Each structure stands twice: as structure tokens, then as C-alpha cells.
Length: 216
Image (tube, rainbow, N blue to C red; front, side):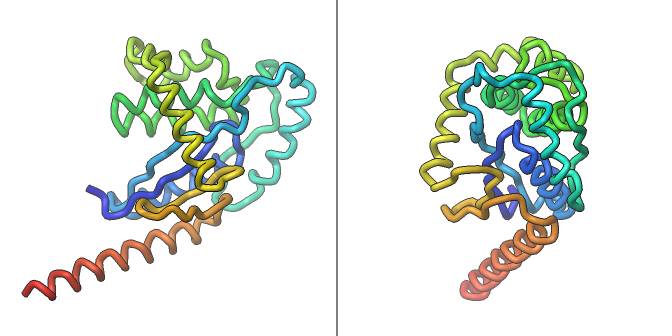
């Protein structure tokens, strides 16, 4: 069991969430099993916008150049594709939760693939055919994708979104340490996530040491 768990509220259509995913994953890997990332859903676009045209969407993606210019960022490309525009946030979350049922590794693979597909490869990750293709590309069993249609998964996504709202979140990414209801808002620099994790781990180790000493 990991000594530390970060609960991360995130949306697959959020460019800053892509950067946060890159940085948090790096910290997790550096800590070699001491940190677990618990990804939870937040729906920036809970409903489809019938007025969102591909032209307007392409113009919007120029704003991705800002997170792209940061250090320790994901790889972004201003939208070049004729696919889209993305309709709403829900579909990729359902697919990610279906992968989670297969285990942490399956979730990790689909989680990264969805972000790269959207921001790097300009694929519409709200399109069912695109989602099926990504599922296959990361090597997950085809039959397991049917879980994305399970109403229980949709309820889980909505419950996680509502949990974030109850915490006072109006945007993402946001991260809180398990056991705390005070989230760190916005995409933080890599070193901020790194220092925070190491400080919490050090405090946990100190508490364990003090408890051990008391029982000697």
C-alpha cells in the first residue's frame, strides 16, 4: 500500500489537466511506489453545445500555446484536424472508468492515451469510434469496453463531479491529499508537486517513528 495518495480532479478536455497529469505522473514515478494518484472526474462540459462550430473550436485551441510553453508540459498541437468539435466531457470519462475496472495499469494506459490523442494528435475523444480505436490501440480487451455503458459508471462520474463541487471547486486541475478536504487549485509547477509530496511523506514517516518509539 502506498504511503501517500493524491486525489486529483481532472477533465480530459482541460489543457492544464494535461500538464498536471504529466507532472504528477513524474513525481509518482520518482517516488517509486510511495505515491498513488486517484484520478476523479470533473465535467467542464457536462452538456453538449450545439452552437460550438469547428471554426470556433480551432480558434479556441490557440490558447493551448500557453500551457504548451511551460516547462514540464504535455505536447500540444493547435487543432489541425477536421474532427470535432468535441461535444462534451462525459464520454472519455466513461471509457477511463471502464478501463479502471481492469486495474490500475489499464487505467494508466487509457488515461495517458486520451490526453495525448486530444491535445497532441487532435483526435475527437468524445466520438465513440475514436474512443473504440484508442481502447484497441492501448491493448485493452475489446469486450471490456462495454462497461462504459454501465449506468453505474455514469453515476460514479457524476458523483465524483458533485464531490468536487461540494469541495468548492469551480475548475480543474485540483489536487488534495487523501484525508484532507482542502485541495490545491490549478496546475502547479513540477517542483511544487514534488516538494508537497515529499513533505507529506516525511511527516508520515516521522509519525510512524514516534508511534514506534512510544511502544518500545
